[in-house]
Length: 448
View (tube, rainbow, N blue to C red):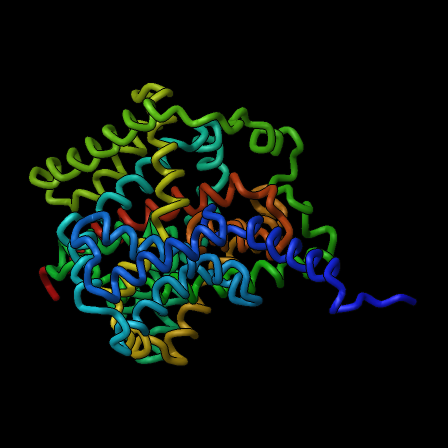
């Protein structure tokens, strides 16, 4: 058999062509690899030399470069890609780099200007929350809420009771267990849960929002890992006991399942003029929440969520503006969430604080919350004409990392057909958790 001769010029040319093709076809955050490397060198040299523009452009260049890179690594590394790798890397690695003093002060000041003074955090939260809710299919919103109301409420109650009991056994106060472990796990993920919660906690307790992100995010990540494990175990149960699973169908009725599998919500080409109108409307929602806060003394971000849900339910927003707002949500959730995590990791997630949060007891409490939620869905399913395995998987999505967590959980169980129900559990369940937790914290904070 003739072997390739490494000295043969044709073999070298062939290898070079394969290498060139690989480099050209590889992408980092939709940017071709070679171009991304060039951009990284430009931003890195500018930051190292201390000539990085100290404005929004400089700050965005830093966090987007690192965000695209770390999220890419988090999606491809074995094991890490299945447990929320992008969120873990984008929060922890920047924190480590700051801890070991590997960023120039000028670079940190530039990112601080973007994150703190320009308040990119508030902008991203508004786009994620309002755009996500207005972009939901109304049929799924109404029918799904009807179907998922009992499992979600039962799962939430079971998760809270279990978490509080295990938390007390592990030495945590009920206050800390509930507001800083249970709530972030069932709050709907990073974008739609942790970030609005951080604003609400800030308005009530007084410290800046970034302080609470560092305290809330670890619970959400650990909860997501447990939810993925639960989904994998439930899938195995379904294989061994076929009578317990619908193999991707939640309801024991083909007619009802067709409502969720054949909804007319096909992707459409982005209209950038509508997107601009949607962005203006999102800003108006955020400002309206702030105005109402002065009257009812409920944090503005929470009121913003309530206004968005009521507007979607009552159909008072033109469908074109809903599409525009959803386009903003798609852009921000795709391009800015991981860069935002970079900024938070650099400035407001001290490594020593993150390490201090983790303990055996902390992980046990997180596990108890997720397992209780999944088990409640499993056992209540038979009373609701649902398949136990699918009901437990969908309920566990309430403790995932938002849309990313839903994909990971459903992928682990090979049941992507459950995505509409998972979105109800994540978005509506998460928004309800944020609202309820904020109202409860407002009520108990004066006595703390």
